Figure (cartoon, rainbow, N blue to C red):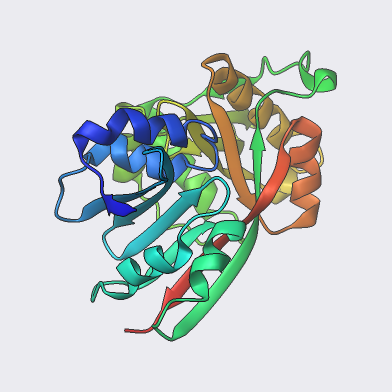
Length: 264
């Protein structure tokens, strides 16, 4: 049986989501931020014959994110999504989304696949790495952080100074950086932090300062801090070279994250 979830279902919902907090980063974060009763956000759940919640479907604006452990009613979730005239996007773990994709009625516009990795502990060989030159960013560092990110050619970032400062002030994002020649040259940040997990983003080093291990040091400092708070870390990547660096730190692939865009 599939039905809308409400505040009274919160405990059962989070008992399911907490089984895989990195995989459910966005669902957990959206529920913690906006709850169950917003016009732009809705949550459905599938219950088995014993009344146990086995799958969740979250709608945020025009995007849907499903989660399930084991078999679930993919066609039922697809019916909910297809009946929404505002539906444009679906994202989530490939093993789950590919089951729903088969039943969606809207024509597919674009599909993107990236590796999805998570970290529950640092690799023993890097725990004692010297990270004494890594600093945690404060709101006053927002301008220089944004300038560094925008100086990286492969990043297509829309971040601005005001938004970055607000994120640092509110604690929804943390950034760490290394300075050399009196300027920021390398950084790593979190995004979408919630009570159980966080995503690592914007890992970058200026071209002139690469091959010095700076990005790894920023990552180790950031990951160590979050893991000490009992949060799982996750990240997307599509560059195998970058993936090898993340795996040396302690990240493990947990599948593919899919992003689908549909035509109206």
